[in-house]
Length: 311
Image (cartoon, rainbow, N blue to C red; front, top):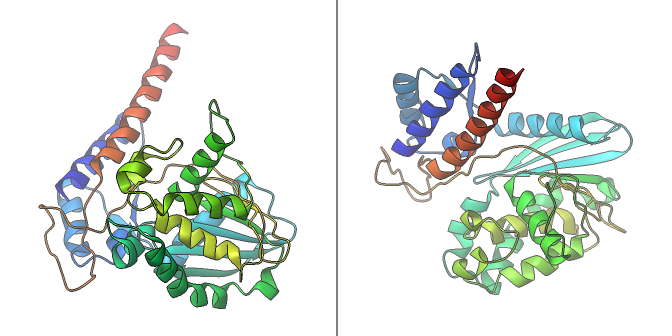
């Protein structure tokens, strides 16, 4: 948690140095469901001056939809925007560009890894995971109503899915995964390949961020269930946004969209304030993800300053 505070302090400082007159911070499932979430937010406010707003799951889904709307043509037909985080799955369902329903389910990649997979991921655990979430997904996304919908996937799960897919296709020089399309069967092939590997083996898979090697199987399993629709098709998506057309189910292809999604972890570190009861998450920050983002922003800011000086 101390690392998270340090990362937030650096981000707020950098934003102000770059001229931001207002800095807004939001928290999602990792803090929303944490046993020590309020304690963490109080520490953030006292040490950084930031007042963090906790987003409800439906608000997360709405923001994902707005982002997809800015990058993809959603004005015609049905669309499903899917965002898989560490603690939850958000779905935004729309028709002809108008939102019909916002859904949040506790099917995040970290949460499901802890519950079903652990360090020794095996096919039996993946089958149990998929079976446990299948009915709930089908209730909110019935195949008969969403057959042929465009599905857009948001977040690191889909960025990594696209990265692996592109490397398997021999595309090693792609500058971005945005707009990548792949069939559901490709997702199933990749999931099948990864589920028998150890985290160390997965970390070496081309196109996969090693930092996600421990949770990526659960993320792909959730995506596969959203796309499967009783094993009927594929999703049309983009990575990080996925979209697709399925022959019989909600969609049949995947794509991606831009954006930065910080890593989220539900396992408490030594600095966690409270540990709570069984399966109650605690807040812990991923300072490495924050540092990578800050370094990237800093480099971009430096280049901008150089250009202005040259002018």
